[in-house]
Length: 503
Ligand code: GAP
Image (cartoon, rainbow, N blue to C red; front, side, top):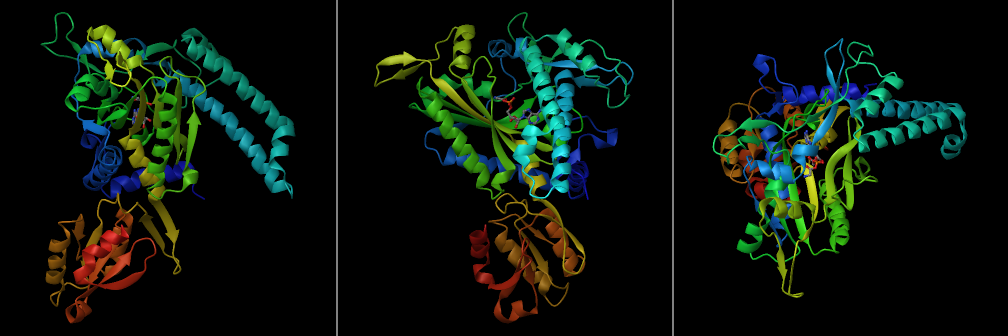
């Protein structure tokens, strides 16, 4: 049976083989944690962005979109706290010369303890009939010992992270006997803080401050435009500002494909509300965002909330929507109640008032903010990995199929003349010319029809339209559905309508 790691490798290979994602700069041996979206990948990515934009901006009268610049005044990152506190604790292994995040090494150690517990439970499950799992977890000595060990390490780890105690983190790594996955040695350097922002020089910023940063999140572009949008859009609380754009972080990563990249895209929305109402809106957006995910037809069991116990100093509530990626449940989207922290900071650092005038209360105040923030690339990986399937058919052959939600699939319909003669290619082109105004279509007349169906299954095309001799008799074509592989005939006249209805 394929392990999760094998499955993840297959998914990465499939993404490359079928033109979804390429390693960046591949002919120069690539760059770690940087990827290019290929001919089909860019379509899927654009469809995800459009689906989000429609749900957030088009369907909400009180949410507008912006597109702010990647370069921003460097003081913004001082005000937001990123210059001083956007750090990862890093540690190097002196033998392999590989660099790791100290916190990730400890987290990996903790998940190995989890694995041990689960293995113990699985073993007992197989051994005993009428197995009472809850009772077993509460009474088995080995399970209890591991649960206690994990709790102990987790508490100490949280405290060290909270105190930014780098010496303590190194001490914990040594005490736990964590080894370098490459060299296998415990020969570690000290832990150092490493700022995640990329910086570069810009000539014309105010004197002495010529270092600018590539933004590590799009959110600050929204905060600094709050007043402009509020005034020019004549907005009334509560209202939101949405943005999709690139963000950059100098991440230290290990084989996570597009889950954690150095250049990635975010879809963020800041919802400005009256102080005191933020927790109500936090719950609202939690629910709304989960509904958005489920609207794509992905099974609800693949998602879960992870409410934060320890909150960042500026937040009074926070949760992650986690997705069951091939490597387990991990953060897909964050929803945070950020109080008035960001606007207050920008007021202080810019010296400009960033207030809302409440006509009902006849009062000026700084609104509170509830943020929804999701990575486009993580959403891509969630949709793509969930869609990837290898299924054995009745005749024993294996079909690789991408069961992408039809709304997001790069190609909606493949137009296939049954054979390459008798006027079928010309008729197929006619149909293609008609459909392409409404849908991304692909024409294909190479190889036998069965192979062409399989090719379309592998790229996730939900509908194949086949033109055959009957088309000339009654103007009907065959629609073959990707998921059920069922075929039926429809009139060419209602073809576009039929595809739209199916989607
Ligand atoms: N403005 C809030 C913010 O940026 P975050 O939790 O750091 O919060 C939000 O990031 C989302 O951006 C994450 O849930 C994730 O989907 C995505 N994201 C963050 N870092 C990423 C990276 N290095 N590569 C890909 N996606 C990333």
